[in-house]
Amino acid sequence: MTTTGAVEDRIFAALANATRREVLRLLRERGPQPVQALADHFDMRRPSLSEHLKVLREAGLVSEQRSGRQRIYRLEAAPLADLQDWLHPYERFWRGQLTGLGELLDRMPDDDRS
Image (cartoon, rainbow, N blue to C red; front, side, top):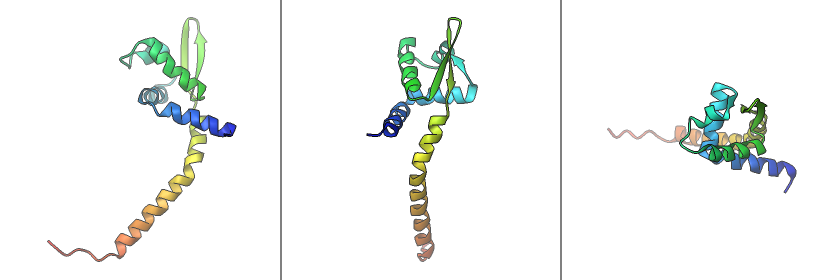
């Protein structure tokens, strides 16, 4: 496995969890936040959320900055852009498939049953 593949695997693994996707959404919509502000959105103990944040940090999707006793988390979108680059050929593939289906349906006679 290449290093790039390992990075993509960590990103996909991080995004596979609904809680982690929600953390990313909160950071995207509300900007950098302390752990407690993030924890207030979830029905879980802080150590559990900290594990999710660790996975996101290791995938490069968030960064952590200490401010006194607080840890402030920030969205790091660059890995998502890399993931989009990886997904782009699949998007083109499916767009082509759907275009072909649309063309086929356009050639089919209309069903005049009422």
